[in-house]
Amino acid sequence: MEQKVALTIAGSDSSGGAGIQADLKAFAYLGVHGTTVVTCVTAQNTQHVHSIKKVPLSVINNQLDSVREDFPVAAVKTGMLYSKDIIKAVGKKLAQMQLHPVVDPVMVATSGDTLADADYVAALQKDILPDSLMITANIPEASALTGAEIRTRADVQNACKNLASFGPQYVLVKGGHFTDELVVDVLYDGKEFHKFILPRIAEKQAHGSGCTLSALITGLLAQGTHPVEAVQKAKHIVWGMIHQGYTPGKGADVLNHAPSVLVPPLLRRNDQFTVWLELTDAVQQLITMLPPWFIPEVGMNFVYALPLASTRDEVCAIDGRIIKHKERPLLCGTLEFGVSKHVASIVLAAMEFNPTIRSALNIRFTQKTVDLCGTIGLVIGTFERTHEPATAVSTMDWGTKQAITTLGRTPDIIYDKGGMGKEPMIRILGTNPSDVLMKVKHIINASIV
Image (cartoon, rainbow, N blue to C red; front, top):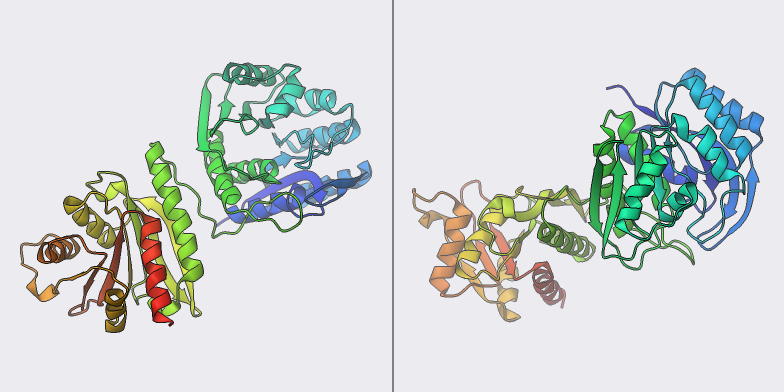
């Protein structure tokens, strides 16, 4: 398979959270080879930008020429260009390379420090935007470039049209600077407006989120993704990176660019997102506390159903498993709807008796664990596979209903001792992922006393 190459033309961030460093991490996340042209070297951390040193134009041009003569660059982005002379030089070279950039009009760092000089806006309008593929501007940047205040959704659409008049084929105005609970990004393709909506992540400064978003869009474009789809996918990836971000220094948090970051799928309903997010957080907590000996040979799944769910498509689960790797739990897969068969069938069957029981996971069977469950007061049900009638469509559906009917109530625990080629298993049921986690914690604590 041909390795796609993307180019970032931006400043270096010594904190590692934004700029060239963030762009390369974003390219790597997508499996795209990243090439770079450094325009400025900043001395900054997560609290302040202490200094900015422009790279000489001759060095910027040499970097561009070096990339041009060796790499088949499929897509390019610009980030921190800082000054009129850098913008003019970069614009001229990109025109020679016949590359239409994704322009991230970096003006201010997350810390509030300025990353552009006084002539920046006019130079960007004249020498970069006319031949660009896309601009990805936040509200203050869009306002600075158009000279108009942006306070309402209508203002955003007007800003998109005004920015499009400078030349870019696509205009993305990001809504993060509004204060609504839902963040709405608007993409204008010259004819239509496309809206991308995800919940705001509270109390996150997300240093490097703008750089990462534009780099992900660029990397996806390099892979042949249509611009509208590239923006949608990039927004979802960035959301996951922000949600699972961390604070390495004393100031702003940064994004988590690890391949293991859980990214929200493209969902049609708000209640799906709520279910996905609750399960995502629970899975992350489970992995941090789970003893490896609790993991069955076939691995673990963790599911959470929508209210009143009746089909597997309405149950969110791990598209894969939690497995034991080097004596540690490891999540292998993403969280999606409609991907679980066995554990989803257990929840759906239980919901027929008690609609509040919407979550479950499976753990390794031992008689000691079953006994511990009884000791700590969990209600236990069981079934025997040898009693399953030939007419049963699903063992898990039949077994769950059998355990509930025999017990006369919906239990916390349903187990079976397996059968020919079938591993014995314990399933923990609860009203939601937090309820299931609480039961898991009690079992773990009881097992190590």
